[in-house]
Image 1 (cartoon, rainbow, N blue to C red):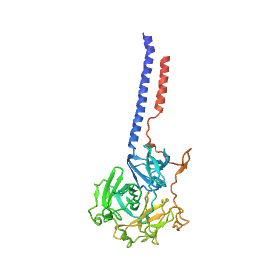
Image 2: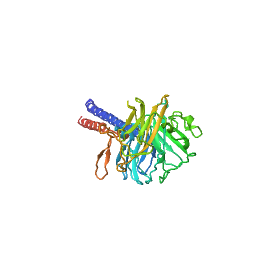
Image 3: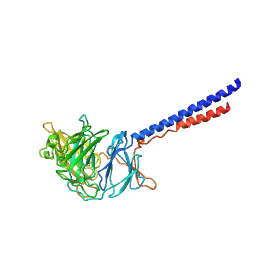
Image 4: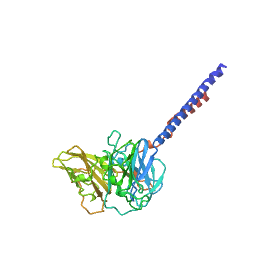
Length: 420
């Protein structure tokens, strides 16, 4: 009897160990699968919006519960194969994780249907509008978004909507400022530019940065050239019945340009056409005066500089501006310590569109190259843009090494049990 028990005990122990090993393996696999599903759920795109729809561009924006990398795949055929990262990543040359995502699809064709998907999400489609005659006069509305502590809310998405228009949007720069070209607004079906009743049209602005948001409604006549400052997490604003001059003492009027101690000399006039995608912005002011310059574009850029000893200032953007409408804003403190802003709209022409002379940097100036996507070819497809991997957005359904280890252990234990 003792001899039989001595032979069976090792077998029972081995089988017990095998069962424990299998249970641990199943636990680890299910745990990884659960975590992967949870991670995917956190990174799902929320509140997806399509704005700035023109004949050659579309802006796609969305939110995520946690900071993650933003990427959109798009193309004229399915599945979409061209990858594009967040507009801010393209400008900075590095990929960052955010809760607020903003991707501009550019150089599209008029009246074309485009397939797209956000990360590994569901594939959808959207169409561009027809090509319309360009409106000569640029009309902009600007403003400033602040955090609850009154600090500038950079990277905030600002949406503009009205009863008869397809929504527009813009990103705030490092100083919380934004500019929207309202003359680019189209009607809902994109077939023509929208018109506004100067006195009665109601504009709605929505500002969103992660889980912080606010909104405001204002009459068109009170919205130019800038709306009052908006504070995130503040109750929704209603400026329809209030005197705009009382609401925004810190927001300067364009009339201050005539008496300004700072000037913008290039571009010289509002709406000027510039035959360079990296123009040299020029101006004058008191020597050693610190000024803040914002270039309001689909990807806004902001920096500070100092007027030199000769009373001149200049700025060359470190990246190429896209053809189309832009504006430059110069902000400074006047003699009373009050913030003032001057603004100039301009139009960047596409290459070969005009023979106008371009004011650019001198040969000795050093330009910072803009980040360029790396193209790689694939069989039976168009060129693709190679971008950093978005591991944060890909669900992990399990890992293989625990299964392999425990399976081999189980086989070994079974063999030992048989031999025992």
